[in-house]
Length: 349
Image (cartoon, rainbow, N blue to C red; front, side, top):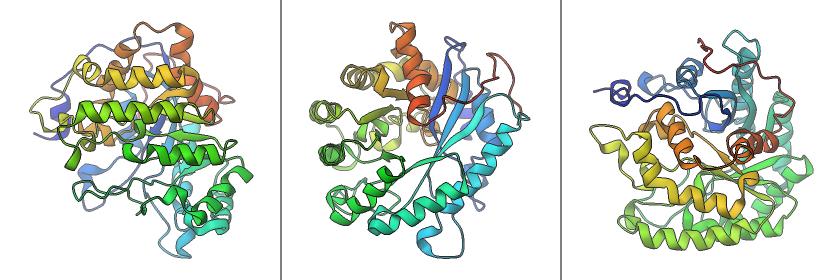
């Protein structure tokens, strides 16, 4: 059974279909030798067409379409150039009213130190939609956990050269997305305290692991994770992205099932993480995210956002506005965008 048929086993009515959404975290990529893994504008549009009222999205770096030539440090600028083209297609209105890739988060190697500023300037020159970078730092000593795609080293966030590169973000008013694993959350807290004026976004709950040496230890990991999150939440310059929790590395195993989970099953399995983050950070510093197509390994786009809506069922309208749209729009500079997508309108790709 292919993935499309697997997802189609679970069909649900869309909950709260008029609730306005900014999806602040998705990827775009092409793998020519594996066309089944392609996730470009048509595939993204298929997911956005599921019925939820997604009015804008933010692209997140993923090693996509780097330049094939030129200085290695500047090759990631190709990703910004590529995504800016997709955003321009969306801005034409030919693909519906949602503003796709309205902001772009790319990659620059902050281990270049102050020279990272040259790369940041090149990204800014490539697109006015470029708003910041993610330099993933996920590192674990366990052989059962793969380190991040940017090949980080242990304690990278504390390294003096990395921090010199990190300081270049603040000089340009750019954001920093942090992707790491839960044992490293205190390292991010130390970084946030050292740069209290730098806006930082914690991706995917800080990566609570459930594979390798962390298999079968969910309760103890959850308790230690909560303590780390409590300390991080006291840093007012840190915002939290809520999603990316049903990747295989999280250990729930949804991707191994004969039938995908429905939204109630997803909500029941993950609710405690969401409620703790919202309690500690507050809705004004939290934003819900899809992390597609990575989380598509475990569920469909429609089911994922339905799960979010189940978790936030008892929240006030203003709290929902912050969680689903306003926080993301503020952090990634989308408040000046016109929105024309109406609930129920078909987006064709």
